[in-house]
Image 1 (cartoon, rainbow, N blue to C red):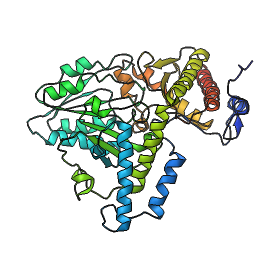
Image 2 (cartoon, helix red, strand yellow):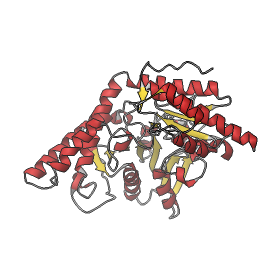
Image 3 (cartoon, one colour):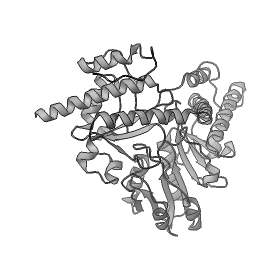
Length: 416
């Protein structure tokens, strides 16, 4: 007998009730049902964000560096967005915010600037679970003589800040650590890192992409020198990001070609994208001030609890660590994570096997391997990342699809 569903009576997903989705998951592919649980890869732009961006295309289309009225209107829109993002981040002055094309550029700028300031410092300390936007530029520099020290994590994905701090010395140019892991949602303890970095004369960079809009942030209190962000991770548009630069820091630009962003990033600013980022920042700040995180954590816990109950052997990676409310990384022994992603998509559910930037490479997650999983274990894992707009009905429908799909895959594997 099918268990009783807990979604509110009449609540639907794209026009289908949860019970209807359950029946369709049992007998075949549903039609026109899309449940999107890949929000760590990207989020849907909020309607308020799209509304804020449109006038920048249609009416206030001027170049913010121009002195005429259209340029002044664009410049005012940039200033308002910069102030909104600074408030969300606890950045102090809006002038600490440099707008970029995204977190990849922000991360590369931070690494470039840290290595350019003192040629004698040719050492960077980071972790084994960073995003490729940090790991890959460091690996490229390593081939040219840079020393890169990569600190590991424990089986729950937790970083020991004491081990990280112990690796810093007077040769270190930069320590770069993410605030929240993009695959597991584990929140890193960064206690004492800024003080130790400054003690040895190093800069402290935080990839805060997956923390922004999910956790309250106070960059001034954290003491970091640089921090990276991306708008499309918090219901803003793609193609725009930011780099926080501590007061008094001389930043060597990665991109030259104009005086924009206080001469810290050349090129005409993406005004519509930045305005959208500012609006997304305000929405995220309001959500964090309410009960949004607690509600979302309850939905994630419901999802994890039912999957573990109904699918024996299911494991939650990082369950023993502090995590952001929206992220769940689960292992379903005996199946292929890629097969699960494909079949779930056929049933109308979007999930992933890990970071969007690396999932197409058909390699086990480097994050899960760093946590001690072997290749087979890592390859049987998937990531579910909810949004602040996720509903009870979507969670219940996703449960039906995931359970039916995993059972189907296990039956196929047993028949082989």
